[in-house]
Length: 178
Image (cartoon, rainbow, N blue to C red; front, side, top):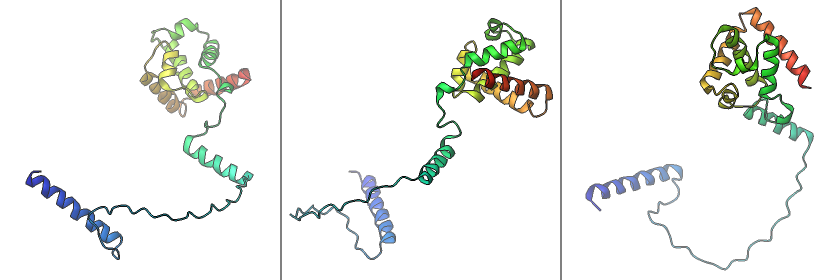
Protein backbone atom coordinates (compact mmCIF):
# COMPACT_ATOMS: atom_id res chain seq x y z
CA UNK A 1 0.00 0.00 0.00
CA UNK A 2 1.40 3.36 -0.98
CA UNK A 3 1.68 6.18 1.57
CA UNK A 4 -1.15 8.12 -0.10
CA UNK A 5 -3.43 5.08 0.00
CA UNK A 6 -2.57 4.47 3.66
CA UNK A 7 -3.30 8.12 4.44
CA UNK A 8 -6.63 7.87 2.62
CA UNK A 9 -7.62 4.77 4.62
CA UNK A 10 -6.67 6.43 7.91
CA UNK A 11 -8.59 9.58 6.97
CA UNK A 12 -11.66 7.45 6.19
CA UNK A 13 -11.39 5.63 9.53
CA UNK A 14 -11.12 8.93 11.40
CA UNK A 15 -14.15 10.24 9.52
CA UNK A 16 -16.22 7.17 10.41
CA UNK A 17 -15.12 7.36 14.04
CA UNK A 18 -16.19 11.02 14.21
CA UNK A 19 -19.60 10.15 12.83
CA UNK A 20 -19.97 7.28 15.28
CA UNK A 21 -19.06 9.54 18.23
CA UNK A 22 -21.72 12.02 17.20
CA UNK A 23 -24.31 9.30 16.79
CA UNK A 24 -23.62 7.53 20.10
CA UNK A 25 -21.20 9.54 22.24
CA UNK A 26 -21.67 7.27 25.27
CA UNK A 27 -20.31 4.13 23.59
CA UNK A 28 -16.60 3.48 22.98
CA UNK A 29 -15.39 3.35 19.39
CA UNK A 30 -13.92 0.07 18.18
CA UNK A 31 -11.84 0.18 15.05
CA UNK A 32 -11.81 -3.58 14.50
CA UNK A 33 -14.52 -6.18 14.26
CA UNK A 34 -14.79 -8.32 17.40
CA UNK A 35 -14.72 -12.06 16.92
CA UNK A 36 -18.15 -13.66 17.24
CA UNK A 37 -18.79 -15.56 20.43
CA UNK A 38 -21.06 -18.55 20.16
CA UNK A 39 -23.11 -19.22 23.26
CA UNK A 40 -25.68 -21.90 23.70
CA UNK A 41 -28.72 -19.95 24.76
CA UNK A 42 -32.25 -21.23 24.69
CA UNK A 43 -34.35 -19.19 22.28
CA UNK A 44 -37.58 -17.77 23.69
CA UNK A 45 -40.77 -19.48 22.59
CA UNK A 46 -42.53 -17.66 19.74
CA UNK A 47 -45.42 -15.52 20.87
CA UNK A 48 -48.73 -15.90 19.04
CA UNK A 49 -49.47 -12.92 16.80
CA UNK A 50 -52.93 -11.36 16.80
CA UNK A 51 -55.02 -11.98 13.69
CA UNK A 52 -55.13 -9.06 11.26
CA UNK A 53 -58.59 -7.69 10.70
CA UNK A 54 -59.10 -6.09 7.31
CA UNK A 55 -61.89 -3.57 7.41
CA UNK A 56 -63.41 -1.60 4.53
CA UNK A 57 -61.70 1.52 5.89
CA UNK A 58 -58.29 -0.16 5.57
CA UNK A 59 -59.04 -1.20 1.99
CA UNK A 60 -60.23 2.31 1.06
CA UNK A 61 -57.12 3.85 2.61
CA UNK A 62 -54.88 1.43 0.72
CA UNK A 63 -56.73 2.08 -2.55
CA UNK A 64 -56.43 5.84 -2.07
CA UNK A 65 -52.67 5.54 -1.55
CA UNK A 66 -52.33 3.34 -4.66
CA UNK A 67 -54.31 5.78 -6.78
CA UNK A 68 -52.13 8.63 -5.54
CA UNK A 69 -48.99 6.68 -6.43
CA UNK A 70 -50.04 5.17 -9.74
CA UNK A 71 -52.75 7.46 -11.08
CA UNK A 72 -56.40 6.95 -11.92
CA UNK A 73 -55.83 3.89 -14.12
CA UNK A 74 -54.14 1.63 -11.59
CA UNK A 75 -57.12 -0.75 -11.18
CA UNK A 76 -58.71 -0.46 -14.62
CA UNK A 77 -59.23 -3.76 -16.39
CA UNK A 78 -57.47 -3.34 -19.72
CA UNK A 79 -60.05 -5.44 -21.54
CA UNK A 80 -62.70 -2.84 -20.66
CA UNK A 81 -60.78 -0.05 -22.42
CA UNK A 82 -61.31 0.75 -26.10
CA UNK A 83 -58.62 -0.41 -28.50
CA UNK A 84 -56.53 1.98 -30.58
CA UNK A 85 -57.99 0.58 -33.82
CA UNK A 86 -61.53 1.22 -32.54
CA UNK A 87 -60.71 4.86 -31.76
CA UNK A 88 -59.14 5.23 -35.20
CA UNK A 89 -62.31 3.87 -36.85
CA UNK A 90 -64.54 6.25 -34.91
CA UNK A 91 -62.38 9.27 -35.80
CA UNK A 92 -62.14 8.24 -39.49
CA UNK A 93 -65.91 7.84 -39.69
CA UNK A 94 -66.50 11.20 -37.94
CA UNK A 95 -64.17 13.12 -40.28
CA UNK A 96 -65.17 11.02 -43.33
CA UNK A 97 -61.66 9.93 -44.28
CA UNK A 98 -60.25 6.56 -45.34
CA UNK A 99 -58.21 4.69 -42.74
CA UNK A 100 -55.49 4.04 -45.34
CA UNK A 101 -54.92 7.79 -45.75
CA UNK A 102 -55.19 8.23 -42.01
CA UNK A 103 -52.24 5.85 -41.42
CA UNK A 104 -50.20 7.06 -44.41
CA UNK A 105 -47.33 9.53 -44.39
CA UNK A 106 -49.51 12.30 -45.85
CA UNK A 107 -49.27 15.65 -44.06
CA UNK A 108 -52.19 17.54 -45.51
CA UNK A 109 -54.44 19.39 -43.11
CA UNK A 110 -57.46 17.19 -43.89
CA UNK A 111 -55.50 14.16 -42.59
CA UNK A 112 -53.22 15.68 -39.93
CA UNK A 113 -56.02 17.29 -37.89
CA UNK A 114 -58.02 14.02 -37.42
CA UNK A 115 -54.83 12.03 -36.86
CA UNK A 116 -53.73 14.35 -34.04
CA UNK A 117 -57.17 14.16 -32.46
CA UNK A 118 -57.10 10.36 -32.67
CA UNK A 119 -53.66 10.23 -31.03
CA UNK A 120 -54.91 12.51 -28.26
CA UNK A 121 -57.98 10.31 -27.69
CA UNK A 122 -55.87 7.14 -27.73
CA UNK A 123 -53.66 8.56 -24.99
CA UNK A 124 -56.76 9.59 -23.03
CA UNK A 125 -58.75 6.36 -23.37
CA UNK A 126 -56.08 3.63 -23.40
CA UNK A 127 -53.20 2.67 -21.14
CA UNK A 128 -50.89 2.33 -24.13
CA UNK A 129 -47.48 3.99 -24.23
CA UNK A 130 -46.54 6.72 -26.68
CA UNK A 131 -44.30 4.41 -28.78
CA UNK A 132 -47.07 1.82 -28.99
CA UNK A 133 -49.61 4.43 -30.10
CA UNK A 134 -47.11 5.70 -32.67
CA UNK A 135 -46.63 2.20 -34.11
CA UNK A 136 -50.39 1.87 -34.56
CA UNK A 137 -50.44 5.17 -36.48
CA UNK A 138 -48.26 4.07 -39.38
CA UNK A 139 -45.00 3.60 -37.48
CA UNK A 140 -44.70 7.11 -36.15
CA UNK A 141 -42.20 8.12 -33.48
CA UNK A 142 -43.28 8.61 -29.86
CA UNK A 143 -42.34 12.29 -30.10
CA UNK A 144 -44.91 12.74 -32.87
CA UNK A 145 -47.58 11.31 -30.57
CA UNK A 146 -46.39 13.50 -27.69
CA UNK A 147 -46.55 16.58 -29.94
CA UNK A 148 -50.10 15.69 -31.02
CA UNK A 149 -51.24 15.17 -27.43
CA UNK A 150 -49.77 18.50 -26.33
CA UNK A 151 -51.06 20.48 -29.32
CA UNK A 152 -54.60 19.14 -29.08
CA UNK A 153 -54.66 19.56 -25.29
CA UNK A 154 -53.54 23.19 -25.50
CA UNK A 155 -55.73 24.14 -28.47
CA UNK A 156 -58.84 22.55 -26.94
CA UNK A 157 -58.88 25.34 -24.35
CA UNK A 158 -59.09 28.11 -26.95
CA UNK A 159 -60.53 26.53 -30.12
CA UNK A 160 -64.28 25.96 -29.74
CA UNK A 161 -64.50 23.82 -32.89
CA UNK A 162 -61.82 21.46 -31.60
CA UNK A 163 -63.44 21.32 -28.17
CA UNK A 164 -66.79 20.41 -29.77
CA UNK A 165 -65.16 17.74 -31.99
CA UNK A 166 -63.50 16.21 -28.91
CA UNK A 167 -66.75 16.26 -26.94
CA UNK A 168 -68.68 14.53 -29.73
CA UNK A 169 -65.94 11.96 -30.32
CA UNK A 170 -65.62 11.16 -26.60
CA UNK A 171 -69.37 10.62 -26.35
CA UNK A 172 -69.35 8.48 -29.47
CA UNK A 173 -66.45 6.32 -28.24
CA UNK A 174 -68.08 5.82 -24.83
CA UNK A 175 -71.46 5.02 -26.37
CA UNK A 176 -70.20 2.61 -29.05
CA UNK A 177 -67.63 0.86 -26.89
CA UNK A 178 -70.16 -0.37 -24.37
